[in-house]
Length: 508
Image (tube, rainbow, N blue to C red):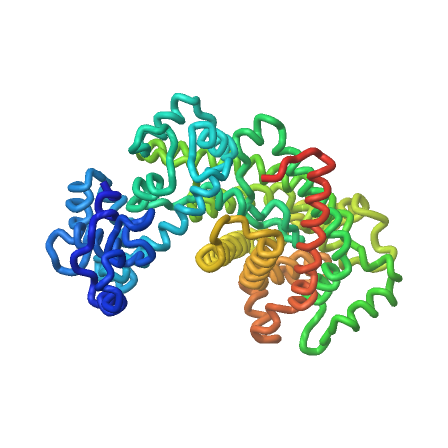
């Protein structure tokens, strides 16, 4: 087994390690692998060099898939070709198809660090050992229920001394050369999209565990998230209305600034006019969240069915699979409530006395422009889902992995401020990427209300903006949009946490 390799004496250290150990070579303890709990004591590279030499079957100084298959097979560890390819791909920095010693060390150190985080997460009693009850509890937290017999079977596969518990060495030796793509407790700690509401509900939803679905906690999470979004959107509504006005009316000849925009709104309709369009913006949270949740759950179920058909037994979704499910759910939800999006834009742009309310606005649009007016700008809105959700998810995962690599030592829990910072940055990047499409959507929604205005398409509007205003014209209103991100995220988080307590939702 791997432990026999990690604990054997090292006859010849690697060249760069030789110099580091020459000064202490005269001391027997310096090369005695049995002097500490882990072979080599403090010199981690010695035991890794020994393992590297064992696996380097053809002695060419590199580990290819064949070397790993033969070498691990001799150690009693049998991995599929696909798993071995993942190991090589994960560590192969120079893309030569094999791992040299430095790449091998980097891969194992990174992998061992993740394994230690998982071990500490599973070790609920904090006694340095994992028993069957701890395995059952940890899997239950992830929504997977197993019997005690199944938990004991898992233990026996790793337990080498018959104690029916797993210590760190047994855990590390069993998993060290096995690729792990989804670390469960990292997924639990880093769930983020439910609590962040910046006014654009295009993020990929969180996945609820089986236990949360069965106990009814899922709807409480949705209610808490909806309440947080309502408060957050109301508090930042003046900035949101200013953004819409700048998207539609600002140009080279009408250079609308933030102070000037607020002054214009207050002069035209008083302080109350700053919240025009907010009512429908808050009202659409409930149907959009509910439809998006149901569509996402259905998409996830369909993906798992497809994966089972192709022979995969993986119980969690990869990042790109979450993106596909989230984008489909977002498209379905946006299609369902899109007329409310048009109403929100028209209400935000209305003059004093133009409409008596939301229903009056809807009736007048239907009477004057027909049903098609409620779907103006639909195409750029749909196209904006993928760059927003994709970049938001990619940036969040990148920031998450960077934090885990650098700062995670005893726990994968990043804390509130790191979560808020990562969520804010990822959401901002997503908005930046999809903003031109959002601006074109808003102008198409608005231009349909102007009598005598020519019919515009997405492509013609893009060309017109670029011709008359340049590329900068595609980012009108970006400043107030970014100004509302930090307060929106902060307010939604505080309200969400308080509503969770009120509704009796247990923290993940």
